[in-house]
Length: 363
Ligand SMILES: Nc1ncnc2c1ncn2[C@@H]1O[C@H](COP(=O)(O)OP(=O)(O)OP(=O)(O)O)[C@@H](O)[C@H]1O
Ligand SMILES: [Mg+2]
Image 1 (cartoon, rainbow, N blue to C red):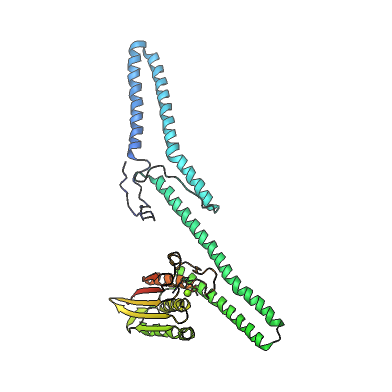
Image 2: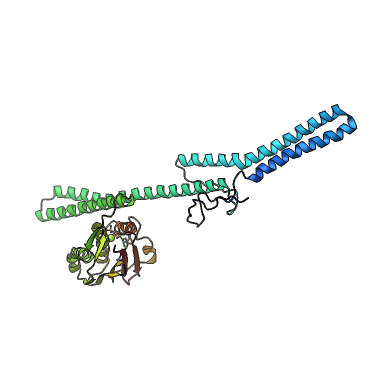
């Protein structure tokens, strides 16, 4: 039987199905009630007819007794059938749901409730089962992300901490002034790395929990980008990189801090992953109602496998961590762009350089 509520307030799952109130049949439909009343009417009719027949052949007392027996037997049969149906249609699914929710409460998210009908014939219990399955899967994903996050943070913090520990020890016992200076510089670099890591984690956490909202103001996009490029000039010169800038001047309504996160991280990656004597091209222009920012480099580039993970927290293509960084830059960039409703695209090939393009609405 088709319920009249299909699609109401339903949302679509990753598999494209509609969830929520998307039951196609109701659990206790009119047909069930009709069948029950038809069965009761049939028992009454059979009892009356048998009373009439037995009355003619055996008299009133026998007819009354026989009819009473028939009535009791048929009623018991009907009660057993109704109880069986109730058990199968209501009690068992509720029991399964209780067991599943108890498991989830204990922190065990390995839960799967099999819907009793095929998709397209779902009743309310099937929808509840599907929703519990989705909830368990989401919780398990969150739990995995949380433990991965803790493992990553601990790992990233441990490296500079062990540097600090060993160099602090060496500094205390070293007499040579020049060496002491070198050790102190290493200590300063390790603590700077720790500070950067913690501030990136805090920033990302705030962005993910929607605690930072863009503070939009009208600004000169070209000026903001030039300021960011300037802070990389020393590193660019040091590596002998050839920098080509094509920056258009226009105003846009944006959060300056957000723009700086995007510009700085993409520029820092381009400088970091470009070989000595390589080339970087930076461009900013206004097309239609959008600001289009691009950073192209002819550095090491990346494989499709690396490209698929670059926006993941703590992901670094080079697992030997030979390059500086914590793998948080692009995760921050992506989050900021998502909050602004913008777009980021990457074009890269191993050995063929990379091109990152960002599109943001100007108003
Ligand atoms: N321009 C690029 N060329 C080649 N690989 C890149 C480029 N930009 C990013 N990647 C790859 O993407 C990974 C993730 O980049 P992301 O900016 O998130 O981290 P990171 O630069 O390693 O560290 P952090 O940004 O925290 O200093 C990098 O480790 C690198 O493997
Ligand atoms: Mg980076």
